[in-house]
Image 1: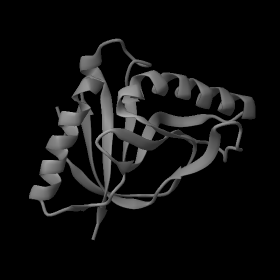
Image 2: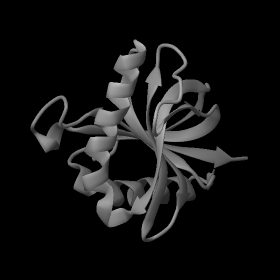
Image 3: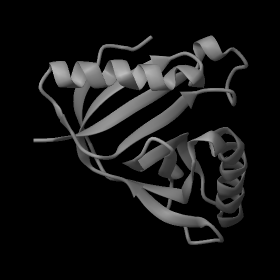
Length: 154
């Protein structure tokens, strides 16, 4: 289920990220360990995460995910292993929230994409998902909430 989409202006936000280029089929195996690595590196630097983990997809392809797994931070992170300082960009975005299990995200993006096109919004090549409520919060996938953000081109 999607909330009513909105057009919003985001501000650039400092983040700590791990850049991953992996086959789509490896997402579920790579994601959890990378989140653990990210949080461990931040804790070692005494930096608090701000909000939920996100995946900023830089380019889209049918068989590969090229993205930055990250979290907004309370202070700039220093490079440590695969963890690097990063940023969610300032952008005009179409935004909605999907409620449901992660397996439903492809359909949610399809529905959101249809809405953007029907409303005359031209999409940039990147997008990000913010996992605001998920397995870290509740075991019930029906209540998970993922914020979908798609930058727009004027």
